[in-house]
Length: 416
Ligand code: EPZ
Image (cartoon, rainbow, N blue to C red; front, side, top):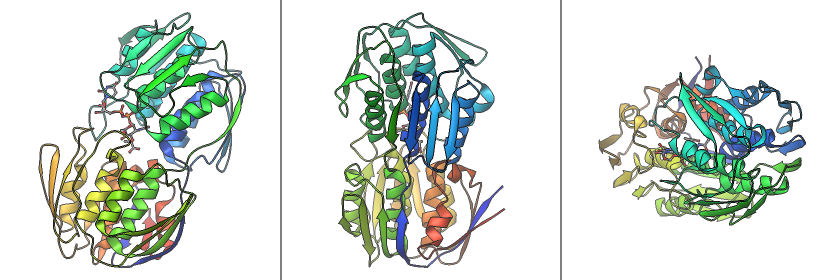
């Protein structure tokens, strides 16, 4: 199992290129199931989750060709309408094959995703929405069996805002008969990126970017070319790294118009930023000011940034409060950070952080994707050596993080 060995205390300086967004790439790859044409995708990030999704899609018969960040898909010879447990158990996003397979082929067999470290994360809204579109769905032996000759458009109101729920239902609705209205739709930029791809494939979607999507079903979708949007969570993760460790870095190939909540909090922390259209120069000359926040759906403060901002708060010059409203167990990083000398107490879904002068390196263990990133950030700010174990979590969602950090002066290396 790989580990990351980090000697903290080094200031960062230089340039980092941001990769394509994991949470846009995963649904976009599944859109390849919706057409017999070619999807020519670029800016697809080099991630473990992407590799898993391509393997899952390939075993359905979808043709997959990958060349670096370019991926070409062709759905003209799909034979297996299934997502087996051994693949789904490692990645919840596999549920995103359900809507497309059902919409195009009238049936699908998809393993129920297991829970994960950050919470139970059911898929009841996905199922409820597909049933509303006319699907007959039964759950047996840990599998979802879905059948429907032809989905029929209808109005769907999800009980809560769900990102992949919106994406599954949006993809299904593009080939349903008639009009579908998705109320309470997620507005994350990754949902918007998927919608733009679907329109390029011939789908008819109104209200893109809002919480009300109106889709007119079409008989079929054709191929398209699309560049995956830049990863706003990766970008904000590196901004937290320089906020905690100090220095002067420039992010390249980043979208700066979809990160307002995170950028506002980083400014409050004392990060000085020069914002370009696709670059951000960030300088940190002092100890961070603590910031309190509560996570919420886009455009509010993203839950995927909660752990990384908490890492900066651990060395800030004062107290802060962090409330996690999306997942019921997304504080797994707290006890690991306290091993580095942080002073964090949790009470239900709120954490109280007292900033300390200095963290001290120690062996810690990653528990989930963004928790891993937060431990790297804390280790960069700590004095001495930190060994982060189980970094397969990190590799799921970050494209060679230690390579990018070494290039800007961090003393970090991967050990097998
Ligand atoms: C997406 O997960 C992201 N993953 C997550 O990113 C992100 O944290 C999350 O959205 C919230 O922004 C991908 O896009 C692949 P939800 P998703 O459905 O869609 C409950 C990362 O770090 N819910 O929006 O699974 C659910 O339990 C990952 O990159 C139901 O109850 O999240 C949660 O409490 C982690 N029933 C809340 O809604 C459902 O049917 C939001 O979940 C669906 C969701």
